[in-house]
Image (cartoon, rainbow, N blue to C red; front, side):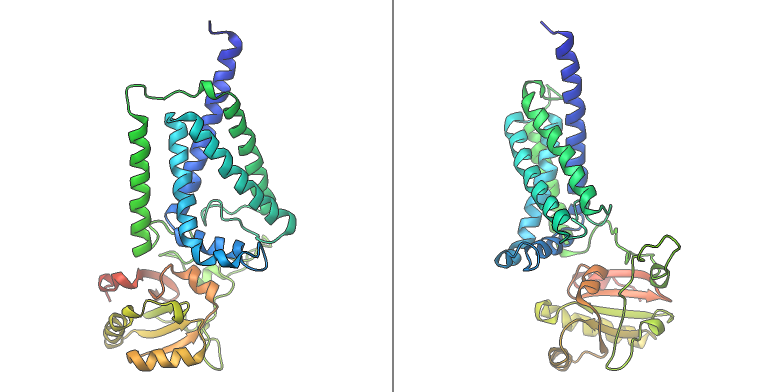
Length: 328
């Protein structure tokens, strides 16, 4: 017999189910489009100044990919009602892990942005922790009332839907890692103007672009470069980690750009000795300027990558693998 109390409980469970499932899918998706951003975030967590687990830094990318895809798949599984007990128990483990990270970040003020929603939504550490506390309560409530979790579409195959979500997530991950994020939430997205992004508003907040400097041995050339009409930046955040097979292709494209009137600059955070060795070995026809590595990683998720500027506005960005697609 279905009692009035059971009906009320069922309604609450379904609301909690929708909130948790939707939030996990959304959280996973905004990171799925840029898994390298999550890699950088976990490298920060694993660093000596935070969790002091530096031996895990080489595994930050596969760890990030696993968690991102798990978020999406578990969110889908909860919504469609696939293996409710396994799904909810997995969600419990995941949210407790996130709860610890966000508490640690907030309490010790170690990581100012947890990256829970990638670059799409920025939350303070305590806002993030509060969000995770609410999610923890909802997930454990669902677990206590697990009998109310039934397949949403009884005639459909929920397992098949979960498998499809896994396949799609894996395909997007593979594509993004070999190209660039399919959605760019950062201040260096195509169409953004760098000087405008550096302007201080009256709200007291630090502007989204606050560390953009392109330095030669004496001066910061960024103020001049953002005023130029046609600029190609070859961004090599760390030369010792670059894909060196890219440089012959980059030389060809740089020569073409120079012939068409572009100013071409390389940008790297590497030491001058490796810069000079790389320039000489691959006969790169451009000066290589210095910029902070974190800034370069924010500018483009490729090492190396190409960015085209026109008076400070970003008109094109490409992974070096797509260099032939750049129309000069």
